[in-house]
Length: 254
Image (cartoon, rainbow, N blue to C red; front, side, top):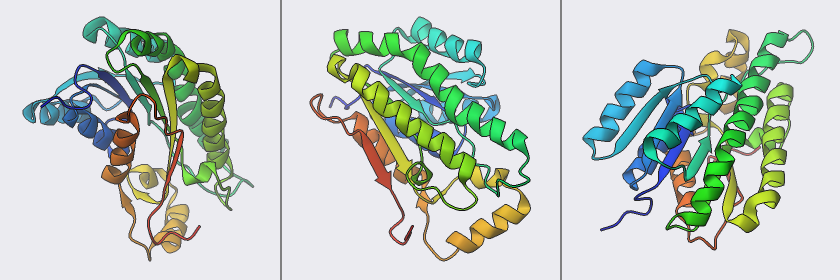
């Protein structure tokens, strides 16, 4: 039986853990050859082995997408080795919460560089190949999936700069959608609510304690839940574009 993404190539950034890892696994299960992109090569290698053992195919690319030449090189290597690019999942990101007053501005730069610039660089490099895939591929569409956050819809105390980057992802995605949708490149924004990933590991101890108080009483989402949403979006019929998906835990009120 032919799987939904057989013959396609999907590039997933931030694939060494969490949502990126789960998404790469899910897309591979649907038949896509997946390009695993992150800075932690050993983790990517282990993931590639698991995908291979399950009958899939994965290409490991160690890269820092905040460096534009590396982002461009990642796309160039993808097309050079696998021949095409059908799906781009911009998942790499970092969440560094805390008050704006007295904040370490290095945290702001990290978020802007990863959450916004890395996404922009990868999208810019990938677009010509995605347009070509939409025009010549058997699916008749190509996909850009940008992972934002519920923080890209609602700004809360302590999330000012993180929210600013995620609002930027939403704004960029909508403008891009209008530019390329008539050429059958679909643009989807995925907005996860509270999800168990390694994002919280980067928080300062006092901020981590506050987050534990905020979400300690609810059953949080798993990375696989978001991966399922991404896979659902990119496996729709060519006439269907799911442009925005907000996924919250059942018990998350805000």
